[in-house]
Length: 211
Image 1 (cartoon, rainbow, N blue to C red):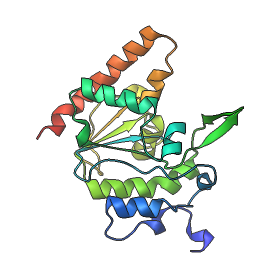
Image 2: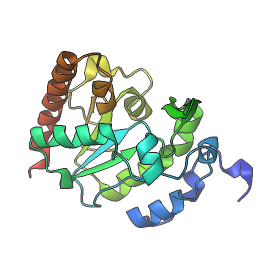
Image 3: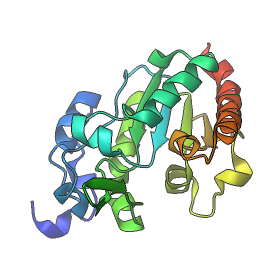
Image 4: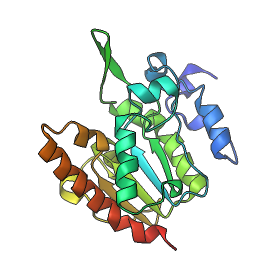
Protein backbone atom coordinates (compact mmCIF):
# COMPACT_ATOMS: atom_id res chain seq x y z
CA UNK A 1 0.00 0.00 0.00
CA UNK A 2 1.44 3.38 -0.95
CA UNK A 3 2.68 5.47 1.96
CA UNK A 4 0.44 8.43 1.10
CA UNK A 5 -2.65 6.25 1.55
CA UNK A 6 -1.85 5.69 5.20
CA UNK A 7 -2.84 9.08 6.54
CA UNK A 8 -5.22 7.15 8.78
CA UNK A 9 -5.91 3.50 9.50
CA UNK A 10 -9.15 3.65 7.50
CA UNK A 11 -7.77 1.71 4.47
CA UNK A 12 -6.73 -1.12 6.80
CA UNK A 13 -10.19 -1.79 8.25
CA UNK A 14 -11.32 -5.19 6.93
CA UNK A 15 -14.77 -5.48 5.34
CA UNK A 16 -17.42 -7.19 7.47
CA UNK A 17 -15.15 -6.77 10.46
CA UNK A 18 -15.07 -8.96 13.54
CA UNK A 19 -13.02 -8.20 16.63
CA UNK A 20 -10.56 -10.90 15.61
CA UNK A 21 -10.15 -9.61 12.05
CA UNK A 22 -9.69 -6.08 13.39
CA UNK A 23 -7.09 -7.25 15.89
CA UNK A 24 -5.14 -9.07 13.21
CA UNK A 25 -5.27 -6.11 10.83
CA UNK A 26 -4.27 -3.62 13.53
CA UNK A 27 -1.20 -5.69 14.40
CA UNK A 28 0.47 -4.41 11.21
CA UNK A 29 -0.78 -0.82 11.38
CA UNK A 30 1.71 1.84 10.32
CA UNK A 31 -0.70 4.76 9.91
CA UNK A 32 1.32 6.95 12.27
CA UNK A 33 4.95 6.97 13.49
CA UNK A 34 4.09 5.41 16.86
CA UNK A 35 4.38 1.92 15.38
CA UNK A 36 8.12 2.57 15.22
CA UNK A 37 8.47 3.13 18.97
CA UNK A 38 5.74 0.95 20.44
CA UNK A 39 6.67 -2.67 21.07
CA UNK A 40 3.42 -3.87 19.51
CA UNK A 41 -0.14 -2.83 18.74
CA UNK A 42 -2.28 -3.08 21.87
CA UNK A 43 -5.80 -3.72 20.64
CA UNK A 44 -9.00 -3.72 22.69
CA UNK A 45 -10.04 -6.68 24.78
CA UNK A 46 -13.42 -8.11 25.73
CA UNK A 47 -16.44 -9.81 24.24
CA UNK A 48 -18.28 -8.79 21.09
CA UNK A 49 -21.41 -8.92 23.27
CA UNK A 50 -20.04 -6.39 25.79
CA UNK A 51 -22.60 -3.79 26.83
CA UNK A 52 -20.07 -1.08 27.69
CA UNK A 53 -16.88 0.10 26.05
CA UNK A 54 -14.35 1.89 28.24
CA UNK A 55 -11.91 3.98 26.21
CA UNK A 56 -8.62 5.31 27.55
CA UNK A 57 -5.90 7.38 25.93
CA UNK A 58 -3.23 4.82 25.03
CA UNK A 59 -1.53 1.71 26.41
CA UNK A 60 1.05 2.26 29.11
CA UNK A 61 4.43 0.65 29.67
CA UNK A 62 3.02 -2.61 31.09
CA UNK A 63 0.40 -2.88 28.34
CA UNK A 64 2.98 -2.25 25.63
CA UNK A 65 5.14 -5.09 26.90
CA UNK A 66 2.41 -7.74 27.18
CA UNK A 67 0.16 -6.55 24.33
CA UNK A 68 -3.06 -6.26 26.37
CA UNK A 69 -4.93 -3.12 27.48
CA UNK A 70 -5.49 -2.12 31.12
CA UNK A 71 -3.28 -4.77 32.71
CA UNK A 72 -1.05 -2.36 34.63
CA UNK A 73 -1.77 -0.49 37.88
CA UNK A 74 -4.48 1.69 36.27
CA UNK A 75 -6.21 -1.40 34.89
CA UNK A 76 -6.20 -3.06 38.30
CA UNK A 77 -7.72 0.08 39.81
CA UNK A 78 -10.39 0.08 37.08
CA UNK A 79 -11.26 -3.54 37.89
CA UNK A 80 -11.60 -2.64 41.58
CA UNK A 81 -13.80 0.37 40.81
CA UNK A 82 -16.07 -1.68 38.53
CA UNK A 83 -16.54 -4.24 41.27
CA UNK A 84 -17.36 -1.54 43.82
CA UNK A 85 -19.83 0.02 41.37
CA UNK A 86 -21.58 -3.31 40.91
CA UNK A 87 -20.64 -3.70 37.23
CA UNK A 88 -19.86 -7.18 35.93
CA UNK A 89 -16.37 -6.97 34.42
CA UNK A 90 -17.42 -9.45 31.71
CA UNK A 91 -19.85 -6.85 30.34
CA UNK A 92 -17.01 -4.38 29.71
CA UNK A 93 -14.75 -4.09 26.65
CA UNK A 94 -11.61 -2.02 27.26
CA UNK A 95 -9.63 -0.23 24.59
CA UNK A 96 -7.74 3.00 23.84
CA UNK A 97 -8.01 5.81 21.33
CA UNK A 98 -4.38 5.22 20.36
CA UNK A 99 -3.18 1.63 20.08
CA UNK A 100 0.58 2.15 20.44
CA UNK A 101 2.50 3.36 23.49
CA UNK A 102 3.98 6.84 23.05
CA UNK A 103 6.87 7.41 25.40
CA UNK A 104 10.01 9.35 26.08
CA UNK A 105 13.12 7.92 27.73
CA UNK A 106 14.11 9.04 31.23
CA UNK A 107 17.17 7.03 32.10
CA UNK A 108 16.04 3.40 31.94
CA UNK A 109 12.37 4.34 32.34
CA UNK A 110 9.87 4.88 29.55
CA UNK A 111 7.59 7.75 30.50
CA UNK A 112 4.14 8.29 29.00
CA UNK A 113 3.91 11.09 26.45
CA UNK A 114 0.56 12.44 25.32
CA UNK A 115 -0.37 11.57 21.71
CA UNK A 116 -0.90 14.47 19.35
CA UNK A 117 -3.90 15.24 17.14
CA UNK A 118 -2.31 13.59 14.07
CA UNK A 119 -1.70 10.33 15.94
CA UNK A 120 -5.19 10.33 17.44
CA UNK A 121 -6.82 10.96 14.03
CA UNK A 122 -4.71 8.24 12.39
CA UNK A 123 -5.75 5.63 14.96
CA UNK A 124 -9.39 6.62 15.46
CA UNK A 125 -10.78 4.34 12.69
CA UNK A 126 -9.83 1.31 14.80
CA UNK A 127 -11.94 2.60 17.69
CA UNK A 128 -14.87 3.43 15.44
CA UNK A 129 -14.67 -0.09 13.99
CA UNK A 130 -14.66 -1.61 17.48
CA UNK A 131 -17.80 0.38 18.30
CA UNK A 132 -19.47 -0.76 15.09
CA UNK A 133 -18.81 -4.43 15.82
CA UNK A 134 -19.86 -4.34 19.47
CA UNK A 135 -22.80 -1.91 19.41
CA UNK A 136 -22.53 -1.16 23.14
CA UNK A 137 -25.25 0.42 25.25
CA UNK A 138 -22.76 2.73 26.93
CA UNK A 139 -19.44 4.31 25.97
CA UNK A 140 -17.27 5.54 28.85
CA UNK A 141 -14.44 7.95 28.04
CA UNK A 142 -11.62 7.71 30.58
CA UNK A 143 -9.79 11.04 30.66
CA UNK A 144 -9.61 14.11 28.48
CA UNK A 145 -7.87 12.60 25.45
CA UNK A 146 -10.53 9.93 24.95
CA UNK A 147 -13.38 12.35 25.66
CA UNK A 148 -12.12 15.03 23.28
CA UNK A 149 -11.37 12.49 20.53
CA UNK A 150 -15.00 11.34 20.57
CA UNK A 151 -16.96 14.29 21.97
CA UNK A 152 -15.08 17.25 20.53
CA UNK A 153 -11.96 19.18 21.47
CA UNK A 154 -13.91 21.67 23.58
CA UNK A 155 -15.29 18.95 25.88
CA UNK A 156 -14.11 19.36 29.47
CA UNK A 157 -14.16 16.28 31.67
CA UNK A 158 -13.78 18.44 34.78
CA UNK A 159 -17.11 20.13 34.04
CA UNK A 160 -19.05 17.22 32.51
CA UNK A 161 -17.78 14.14 34.32
CA UNK A 162 -20.42 11.65 35.37
CA UNK A 163 -23.12 13.09 33.11
CA UNK A 164 -24.86 10.60 30.84
CA UNK A 165 -25.30 12.09 27.38
CA UNK A 166 -26.87 10.88 24.12
CA UNK A 167 -24.52 10.39 21.19
CA UNK A 168 -24.74 9.38 17.55
CA UNK A 169 -22.37 6.43 18.11
CA UNK A 170 -24.08 4.88 21.15
CA UNK A 171 -27.30 5.29 23.15
CA UNK A 172 -25.38 6.78 26.08
CA UNK A 173 -21.93 8.20 26.66
CA UNK A 174 -20.23 9.30 29.86
CA UNK A 175 -16.85 10.82 30.56
CA UNK A 176 -14.89 10.49 33.76
CA UNK A 177 -11.27 10.57 34.87
CA UNK A 178 -8.68 8.03 33.81
CA UNK A 179 -7.77 5.72 36.71
CA UNK A 180 -4.11 6.62 36.22
CA UNK A 181 -4.92 10.13 37.45
CA UNK A 182 -6.12 8.63 40.74
CA UNK A 183 -2.82 6.81 41.12
CA UNK A 184 -0.98 10.11 40.64
CA UNK A 185 -2.81 11.75 43.57
CA UNK A 186 -0.34 13.35 46.00
CA UNK A 187 -1.43 11.48 49.14
CA UNK A 188 -3.58 8.61 50.37
CA UNK A 189 -6.44 10.84 51.46
CA UNK A 190 -6.74 12.46 48.04
CA UNK A 191 -6.39 9.10 46.32
CA UNK A 192 -9.19 7.62 48.44
CA UNK A 193 -11.46 10.59 47.73
CA UNK A 194 -10.80 10.47 43.99
CA UNK A 195 -11.48 6.73 43.90
CA UNK A 196 -14.83 7.30 45.63
CA UNK A 197 -15.76 9.91 43.01
CA UNK A 198 -14.71 7.55 40.22
CA UNK A 199 -16.87 4.74 41.63
CA UNK A 200 -19.75 7.21 41.99
CA UNK A 201 -19.48 8.00 38.27
CA UNK A 202 -19.46 4.32 37.34
CA UNK A 203 -22.51 3.60 39.47
CA UNK A 204 -24.47 5.95 37.25
CA UNK A 205 -24.09 3.66 34.25
CA UNK A 206 -24.63 0.39 36.14
CA UNK A 207 -28.46 0.46 35.68
CA UNK A 208 -28.01 0.86 31.91
CA UNK A 209 -26.19 -2.48 31.75
CA UNK A 210 -28.72 -4.60 33.63
CA UNK A 211 -31.43 -5.13 31.00
